[in-house]
Length: 498
Ligand code: C2O
Ligand code: CU
Ligand code: CU
Image (cartoon, rainbow, N blue to C red; front, side, top):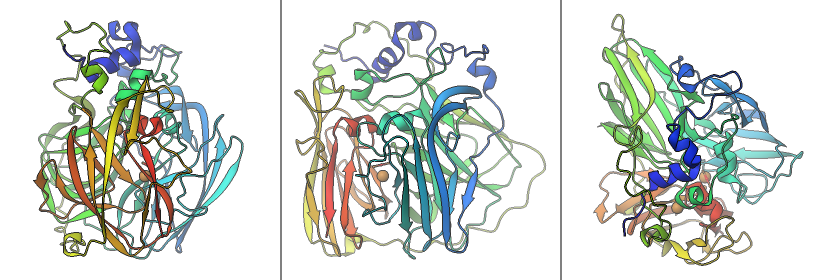
């Protein structure tokens, strides 16, 4: 029996037959003024507004609300922080205090999570168990340690069962922890990549059961809320792109053929020397810090398809939707989706100074391991508590998320080695709040570089070994699959450090 392909199923599940017949991308929504997405594409890239700390503090309000907001060059009925998709970019520095008043003007509960930041999970800090009711305000306060790694982070809601819907709706924004010694570049850009599906009325399309099981992928992939924006640059410049994959489930496989790319860092980790790359794969939640050296020409920033596998149910033919004869891939399946265009022209600019060597990152392979653990991510049959799971259970160690149960207790001040096992035929990832993970082995391969990530992909039917240093911050927090539909279905656990 041939399993239905994940992308194919997503199309059927997400758009319905009418959407597929209409061509899938863009044509389905004419909008109130008859605007087509294609007409909106190509505008110069804009960036979210910036709020920067001064004197060691950044205080701001974030209002989460629905509105008719500019998205993909049109006005769509989406969610936004402070009326923007994405919300404002926050610039902070190691040692800073960050105060955020979250105003919930949604019609459902929400809360706030600072993804990747190494801050306390306790009290009114980065506490994923808080529930801010509609109409309520809540004062969060975070203190970054003086040693906080610089880099790209992001914020998004984290109320269980609603995380995927609220991020898909437009609630996300970037956080940058600035470098103490800036990397010499011609310019910096923030690229927040997220996907969404709009219906005929310009509203966010609801996810089907199939979407949730596979992890929904929107039919529009936006950069800073824009569809296929253009970036212009002079030749000979060096740009620094800070990219976040804010897609609910989609993995990005990014290419920019014709321009020279070097990877400066991933998530909160920094390579000692920028490494030339041709493409980078970002699971949902991952970030890349990229250096782009420009040469004359027109280049496309593409994301190529990533096969995340199928659920076991589909392998058994139980989810067959009878479209096996359709062998023609939809647009973008083989060639990739264009996210943006880079136009490099004009007189050559002065080269910035070379990138100084970065401090060597900590290497936990040299440190003593106090405990080892395994985490097994699985998808099984049975009626779960996950809403709309289609008779499947999305579990870690055989259990669905329960905020009142502590699944693991670790000791503050120790280093642990974890084996992350994916027992299913589809990809999952593991994201741990507060403490980043150093990659040791993935898919049977030793990792020789020192690589730190806070979202680690675990290939289907495979395993990954990481080490984690629980240096500080007693408290309870969570780890979960960052295919956020899976998280909402229960693929999450609770860890307490003490
Ligand atoms: Cu980006 Cu717990 O999440
Ligand atoms: Cu997180
Ligand atoms: Cu998953």
